[in-house]
Structure formats: structure tokens, C-alpha cells
Image 1: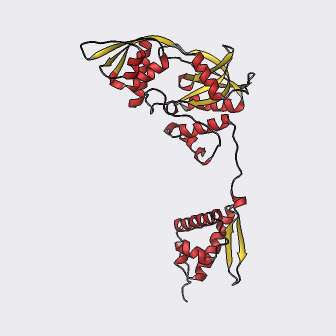
Image 2: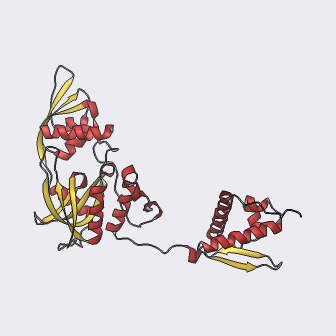
Image 3: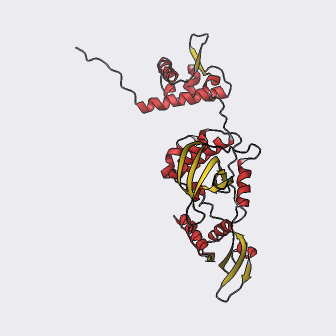
Length: 332
């Protein structure tokens, strides 16, 4: 008795590759406005079909069309005069509807995508922000006026323990509590806030909202926030409708600037931004002393750090610590 003849099993990877090629050909054809594609058209574009006879390719195509139809790809079929079939993609049914986000929602999604580049926040990266086109989102991460360590920005420093409750609180419009530490040498300050938005500005991320303890709008830099707790209490101070979140952050930063006096030592002929901001005293050891009065603390920390070994803060001590911390982040 003759042995029963069997058909060799097809390699699943080869089948998957062929079906993907078919899907891409149909998508490209629909976007180009081409009519139905015949078996002849598809054999000229897809290697697996061209390597077989017309009948074998037609049977394979029929199976592949059924497979992608089961996946939910809306196909249309027509019959040509010779009795063969042609296929095309119904692009109107296939394309996803337009998605609109508020500026706050778009900002949260965009930041989640950026933060997801870090290993510990990889789950956020899978959110698919790169596939969403949120029209009108302005994530201004442009260079600041002065030299800074651009690679040491807030996007690479925020932890999930801080980020997740803030995202949820902004989305749910509920109050949050947290500790705010203005500088490494400062004592954490407990805060209560009605959060309005998460706002990226000049490589930094700010939590914008209504400070319930100070009874005023305020922006807090997120990397200086810890021990975030999302409550179930709905916010009682909504976002002002007449001002954008970015403008409110800028106003808050200007209003809450910390001006300090400081002494910095720099190598002769370097660190021009610091020279321009203070009084220069030359020395014989190749180092100049810069005395600064009423300078913005944040600017000083970032500017000194940007010059690396060319500049060093002598006083105050808490600024020395903050510069060292920023440089350490750059090294790591």
C-alpha cells in the first residue's frame, strides 16, 4: 500500500512575512489611489507569489486574504472579465478616526513618551506616543539662553514614583500632596496642590497648579518633588481659562525667583557668561574670582555646571552642593 502523500508545512515566519508584504502593498495602493489589484499585479510585487504558478499563487493569495480579513483589515473584492478576482483596501474603514487632545492631555502623553526612553520607565514608552499626532502640542525643549548640560534634563531624572501619581492627578483633576526641596541643602517642605498641568519648558518639567498652602498659582520643578500622594479630593481651583499653561509657568518662575550673592572662581579667559554677570578680580594663579550679586540661583547652578572644570562655586555652600549634584548626573 502506497504511503499517503503529504504537503510540507509552511514555515510560519515565511507566511507572516508574506502576509505583511501583502498588507503593505494593499495599503500603498490605496494611498496612491490605484484600482483593484489582480493576481498578476500582486505576483509582480510579492516574491512568494511570483515564484509559483498562477494557480498556486491564486490559492495562496486566497488563503492570505482570508487571514488578513480575520485580522480586521477591510478588503473589497471585484471580479474581472476573465473571472479572476481583484482586491483593494477600503481606506475609509481602515484609517483610524482623528484623535483630539487638550494641550494638557497631549503634554502628558508626550512627556510619557520621552520619559519612556529610560529603562525604569520603559512601560511608558509602549504607550505609543510616537504613533499619535497630537496637533498643536508644543513641547519647547529648545536651548536656553546660556550654556547648560543639555543631556542632564528633567526628562532623564524623574522617577516613576513621582511621575505616575502626578499624571493620574492631572488627568483625574484631584488634589495631590508632596514634599518640595528647593535645594539639596534645604529641608523638604510639605505642599498641597490642585494640579492643572505638567508643563515642559527649557529642558525642565514643572507641575503647575494652585498651591493650597500659599493660596496662589505656582509651578514646582518636578525633580525637586518627592513623596507624591494622589488624593481623592476633587480640585476646587480650576485652571484659569484666559492664560496658557506655559505662560502661567513663566509668570510663576519670575515671581518666585531666588536671588543670591555668590563667589565663583574661573580660569582666566574662560566662562564669559559668568564674567559678564559679576565683578572680576584677577589673580596670579591663573584663576579669576567673580563676585556676583542678586543673580538667579537656578541660572547660576546650570551655568557653572555647563563650564565643567573651568568654573567652581566657592560660596554659598548649598549652591556648591547643587552644582556638584548636577555634574554627577552628567557623569552618570
